[in-house]
Length: 553
Image (cartoon, rainbow, N blue to C red; front, side, top):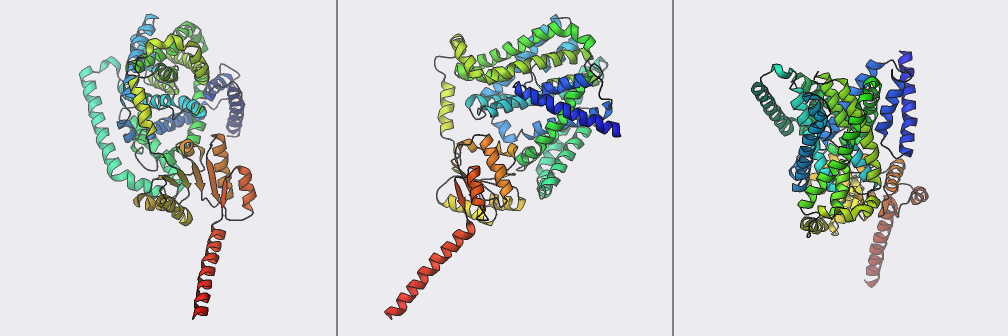
């Protein structure tokens, strides 16, 4: 046991320094994790022998990853994906699967291998794209919103693909019609179960769990792993079960709070998946996969953006928007590797397909990261060649711009709905301002929500939750949090996100003013002092009026 603990500590230390190096190179850390797995595995220095423990953590990491993806697919968002996201997503999926299959099969792979590779090439990394767009402050830009839309389509497609392929456990031994009927019946059964859970059980259950932030986190992980186990038992995969678990909570008002709490755990556990992947790569087969990996990487880096630009241009978007959105699909994702790994566990394909997919993943993720980071300079150099992808009248983009300009956005964000915070928020509303309020106390949240206030459940100091708020479009943020440390965390998060608006913070002690001003607070409010001063002024006025009345008499 002591040796296993030591191995884990060494593994984490190496991963931390490798991640730091990848950030310096402006690369996603998952590439560094795969390389760490290669270095510490049998093909490298053989530093880790606790393969069963790493494999278990890797499986839990995949479950949490798919759970978080499902958690983000709110039914309201699915209904309003929009024609361009749906058309672009389905068009890119169809194009990549057909031509990816033809390319892979032409390079000597079997039909089943070619199917898995072709499907794997269709998925783009939601985690990487969202992170890059957030860092560039483009998540709310038109191309950012469209990209998130067709990433949702891809996320739905990967789960459907996992369900279908995991149902092919017996290969050609099963009658095709019987297999399709079996899949349809199971999907209908799952839909009924999900409807009942989401309608009658989940709202009450999650509301009770939300009374404690720690309990809410434990419940979310238990719910995800439980569904994953049931998904495998039902004949699908644990990945599909985990996705459905997240999806069942996606319409809950506690979704953002759960997601913020799970993000760090997801990033920690998925580390072990990529390390496990790197340690299991068979380098004796990778040499023969080099040229197929180069061909498929070029196909993904060039073909996927071109089809997105073509579809968006046809639908009435400018070439610039199509180009910036198209770059977000110029790589394959962690789901591609998870999908192929599932095929190996089902006995459909060999490990050589995993090696090929991993090589394509490393190449496309590395290159597309730089393409997205420097998307605007690249566009400026090649924009004259992209006119073929733009109509004379990009009518749809013009309409989108007009509609987006009319969107109602909050003037003030109030964090903390205690007695002072809720009174302040209602007062600002009465003054005619658009107010969005934040609180992680379930009782306060429900009370204000029932009163008609625009309120979100979550911790206003958690960076992942802050990323879900429209802070860049909000003029003022008011924190009524009583703890100075919480306000420090909030100001640090706002500074990281380059928030340019004004911040007012409620201080409980006069000595906190200098610290809060130093952190960047525009205004410091003193509820006790303000109340005392108001009381003094009010009483003084009444006493003076009373005295005057007595004198007149």
